[in-house]
Amino acid sequence: MSSRIRVVVAKPGLDGHDRGAKVVARALRDAGMEVIYTGLHQTPEQIVETAIQEDADAVGLSVLSGAHMTLFRRVIELLGERDARDIVVFGGGIIPDADLPELERLGVAKVFTPGATTRSIVEWVRANVAQPVA
Image (cartoon, rainbow, N blue to C red):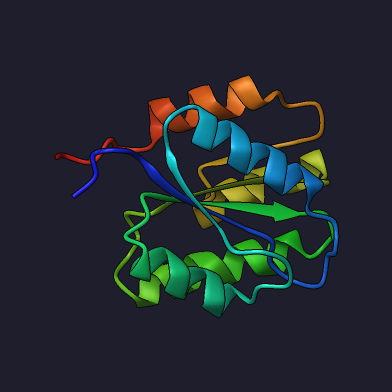
């Protein structure tokens, strides 16, 4: 069993822009984490299934489409239904500041808005995602 943090990076919904998600996935990998990138156009069901199958410690969602409230909410609901609430959900994208408190209330641990550095994301994941016991 690996003792590295395992993160699923996913692009839910119809958004076709994944450069940011790939940059974050590479930064997390370069920082020593195991990263599973799911690719474009994933459903919340596919993302949660991947997170559970891969024994992920966290799921990072990239949402640029404006559907962040629906997509984050559904991923959190599905994790709850699968008794996987211990998987930390964080994300980023074009998300209005006014929506951040509601996302936090839903259980999203952190949202990175445009301008966040890969260093700040890596440091946040290291500090807020439990390191697995080897």
